[in-house]
Image (cartoon, rainbow, N blue to C red; front, side):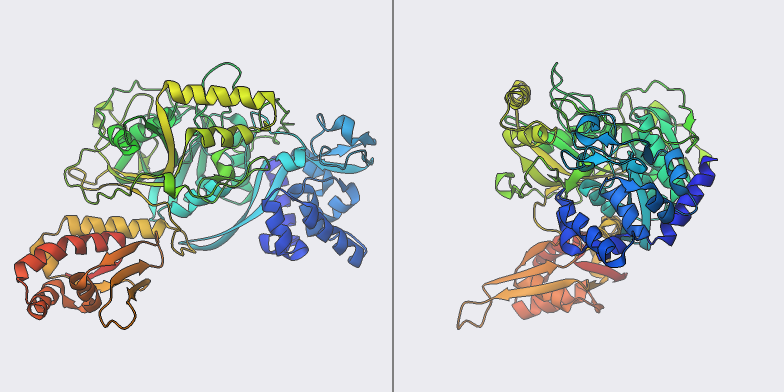
Length: 636
């Protein structure tokens, strides 16, 4: 019965053209921007103006008012907007609740979701429906092309009129978009979304994986994720309940994806902790557990991608700690009985009113705007903290570096080629690793950010108490800063790891309309090629400058020779590389026709330098340009 209702809902949403572009057309670009700031008045004025002009409620506008703005609508209007499902079907699915008699908004806001946002002193008339869930259109462009879905999640603060509850399931936010943009789109047999939430990462993975397993510790999150998959006719995702890798113990995957609950929260009485935001472990141990667990649960050649944060301890750079996570020895893993899969949408979603708590409006990483900056009603946007970051560290292609190995409590799913493969605890392999730090925060700013995003105002006694708890926790463990970034881990297809790169890139990224995933895949492929290529073979290679690369030269007035030459990358990470005369000439001559050795020989003659010395200087830098995507290998 439920599946039939979801089919009707899907048909109605399509018929109403309930889409991102349609909503922008209803209320305009400025109202869209205001909604991203949790301000809905401009959008509501746009809908009211449209109704005034038309003389009736337009179906898409009714759906937007109810499911996006979180406001009540007339039953008759919803019946028109959802002709196949009807208002009764929306109630049966748990999307909305009927108000059978007039209620006072101020009185009933805490017990009736969707009433809270009504203006103070107003009442909700009988015969109206209030939302129990958000239902938003979502559009994207990835390596496979353009797509659009509808995403169901719990009502946000704007609709509820009070802070979120501990069981809240978030929709698509800034960090979700960051991770989906990083996903390597290479076709694989199996993928794992660890901590799926509303299911957005699993849905994106379904576009390049034959089958996907999505896990979460929240039954409600799995219910909503399963609803989203069925609503969007995605049938290759299996949902399992459990913590970390326990639901997929003894299995391997070609691609592991995770946006884990990495917020560092004091584990002391009186400080709220939320399953979708706080991992339940001390400090950054949750991220460490995911990193350590990946090794024994990736197939050969398999890749894990996750967002995370990590602590800087007094007198120690965070990258030293990350390297230790990657180099730790294997800890035997006790086999865990596989968890029974969650049956997708076996019954209507149970509404959750998300009750308020005195110091809690939890914000998952999904709610970030951009990479990691918070975007909630309670907090100001944070500017990049490049000035606080340690100097850039770049160690490409560290041959022979020891990699990560699995640790206790880890597991991951993955049936390679459709057949389940049992993983032995001693079978974990060292990993290739690429870790990119995008932002750094001081403990004070980190604490303020998360306390505000927990719904506690800075002018209250509760704020001061929580602030003290956070700073006490950081001080006790010697934490001086917290870094945020991307992590890419890979199990070598054969042999030992050759790729170990930890770097800080706090600047603006390049232009990547289809996401960064293809760029990451190309960089890995370039590394694999040059790591297996000695200098003699590299000298015979024909390279070409990537199409997005430009060269900039700076001159002092009246001078013929440039004082500074740089290469600029238009896509990817938007890198900037300083050039000297020899490297600039080599790059300029790399057109895919001449091999590297011939170019170096010609330059040595032109510059009147020893050819061997010039080659010894340029070839390592050529490898870096290949790995960063400035140069591309054409013919060997």
